Length: 116
Image (tube, rainbow, N blue to C red; front, side, top):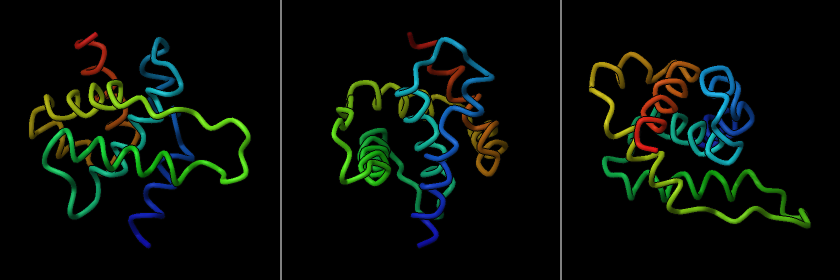
């Protein structure tokens, strides 16, 4: 339940920190970044980019209303770029931002922009 609550909080807060840090990041990428930061803060966080992508996808599916007429398509390549951005951060930055969603989102957004 704690994981679900954290993921839901991350999804609800989509783009709040990212929007302030990086105006050129679209809503979908911001959503993936918020989901990744929520997943990364868990006790048993993934250790590979592929595992992060799978967790981001699960969070995105859980965040969709079952009755929604238009459901966004999951962009695995974009989610992988987000996961790779997280993986490129130093251990020091990860530790410093792990329980600071806005800081995490900002750091990942900056790393994501460097990849693009």
